[in-house]
Length: 574
Image (cartoon, rainbow, N blue to C red; front, side, top):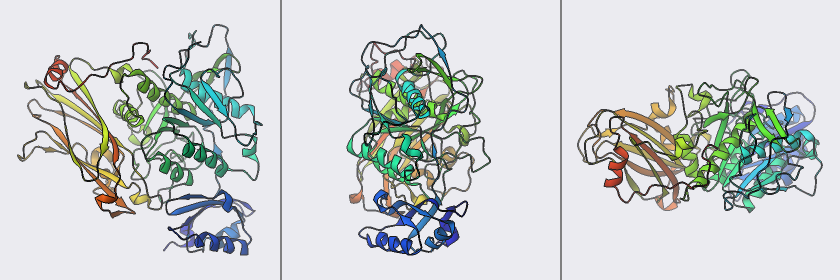
């Protein structure tokens, strides 16, 4: 049983303020909300049930109350958490935004490369028609009132997805990979006392529930660090929508990385296990590190490795340059607001560059698989810096082979994924890198047992039953790095696993992964009949420096493996 002090997360000041509460609401217990409403009114709180948001087992709602009243409400037995409503973050630029007008920049005249992808950006709006060949802007409640600050943010984020980060020598912008629906979820109402983060989230939720999108970007959210004990309403709400694995959502982690420990952690909804949270790197060059402003991990467990990775976000020394339609010039800015859509652009580019229909989950797995870690602290950069040059992802060298497995696991299925090797002995050392990604429904009221789906992945160096062939490629140490306090099976419930190892000559004969799919409900085992099919992706790269013909040898042996062709018109450097 939680004490009152455990339920109250953050209340500053004594005046009447906006507060968010979370109630335990088991199924068919609407009386909990009615009883709480009566209790709140009796104690002088103003409750707004019309803007409540229900997620499995929990109901979130905004109220207005003083600190004294809030502490009284915390005595309600079904109340889980209560905190002062945080301010909205736009992951605002961390350097003064400047624009250099130029006469040599020109917009493309062609339509988007891939007209079939559905892409959405939720931000501050556009207010200009320059992007109209590729972008449709939507507002809410017929309200077009806004501010220049919100519009410039929305324009820069959208321009990043359309054209990427630019150089001062850029003359003609590249043809966008996709069309975009831009939803102006932020407007002048956001600053009014009766409109808050709940309104913005409800707008996003309504769009995603009524429309299917392949790719989505969020460079906004509540400005507060993640809480290990509670899942925020933003994360809980979006997690349910993204659990199918059919949508990839990139999320900016926030720009408070320079604050003291704990206050500098990633900000909701960057803790989504079904999303891709993106921090900021200092440079596009080989000499990079985490930007000091970029929020750090870890996330909760499951969801421990956060951010998922970093991408160029800009700083004073190397600003993030993006096309500004308002000034027909280059805007110099910086922030995780821009590294996140830059990664979304890379994912979209992958989907558009290949003559095979890869899923958004596969695009996520490919980006994580090729992230450059440089042995930096995983709490700071996650799996590493996401690739900016897509040729690293798409092409294989002669001495390596890359295999993509994507599909759905049936609840009762134990799958064996064979790792292709040639018939001849592989000479020298052999490096194997593997990445698993899957999507999972969650239990928001059980942070410790958050994901409801899990995989137990066992690597075997050969397919016989001989002793010594099992290899711990995906174990606690490889997933959690130097963490020693994780539960023995915690890594089985992580939705992303990545590891690599270099094997000695002759050590791999017929390697494979044996994959078992498990489920749980509120931490308890469930019948396999109650489980849905699990979307998954496995990426495996096998390389051997002393075998320059490895790729061709494997092609000859596994003729059912078809190389994925590249669309000829695509410029791979996105």
